[in-house]
Picture (cartoon, rainbow, N blue to C red):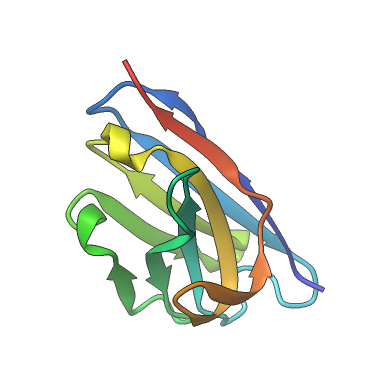
Length: 121
């Protein structure tokens, strides 16, 4: 089975940057061809899509609120998907989840355990 482990979360000031990483292991690791992505969830909102990247890395999608600020990428050799987050604001505070085999707006075959991102002064 696939296991996804996120890292890189933490506390950052508004306007700052963080880089999240999702390392995949198992039979179908990150970079094996699955559509990968990032979702986030707050205490007030349901889980929302943030960004996705196709198995070949050629197609990316982003939710409108992060366009121009976040960049998703993947390194097949390292079985890792990244989310570079720039110009962070307080609305970006959430638990960020890595996902593989995305099948819908809030569904995927595999999920990571999540990493907390807090944007605060």
